[in-house]
Image (cartoon, rainbow, N blue to C red; front, side, top):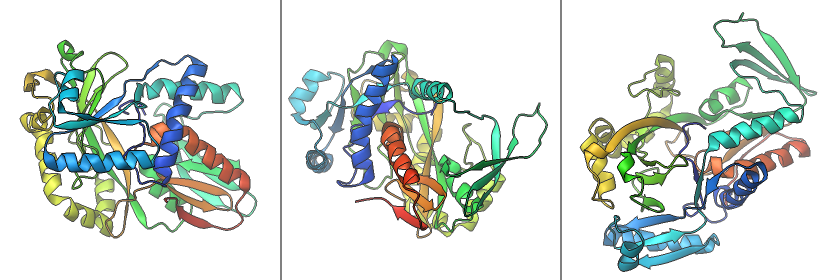
Length: 373
């Protein structure tokens, strides 16, 4: 969460009727309500999705229609109005979303942790799950510490119900629990740059490109940060390590699991051309810069300072298709959240409400549900 871009998303990109569309819209308001209740600062910045040519303009109008179906507060603006609002941005038209904002999700999570502990909950950091066993009456979880200064004693915990939000390790935890899952988590590194502080006022709102249908993510954008800075990014580079934040990270065990998974090769084949371009731009700053200069030509390579990267945890099926919506696996005493990519931070609270509802219902029979419209 500390590597999150900090955007409170409106929900424009998601298929009408999907969980992403529904929970993102609800979550944007719930996030603001939580921040208001606990004194966490946030900003209602709005967002412009900018078209730079006729092909993008056509896709932008399709996005606008989707926004209307999703009942979002959205405005179409022409080239002249775009120039008036954002003099440093170039485009032939744009969509303006009023309900997009920014927040520090690190602060949000810290406050959530405080609330949990104040209500008698316990948070165990530096703890590794090594076994999960489900019986008719309970679930047992075997854990060890990852603290190198502590003894590696194995401990067994018990619960009536277990909720697993495993992120990039969701597939491994599901299999550890005995579930037969047909997906694998694939990491996509999202690399950012931070603009030189002299450009902190270059835009007044978030600036996004119109998504490229050939790419799985939203494209390189300008994001205002709560500390007053502006970031550029992220790109989307397939990672060679599930938790490899340094640029050239490689984990042999992770790579071996990718090689054995048919879906990895299929998604790699589908994304081969775009993957080569993304990898080139990752290594070649001028290539990365060109992506943002399409709509912000004022920037130069000297304006970009490398920022920490984030890792998107994306579930990929054995046929090579990416799981588009949030994905849950249920058993009588477990609920596994198996795919929660963006906008999961914005949607976190209504996702939690859905989890609570499902757990309290004590489903009697195992089921798998990709909960999309």
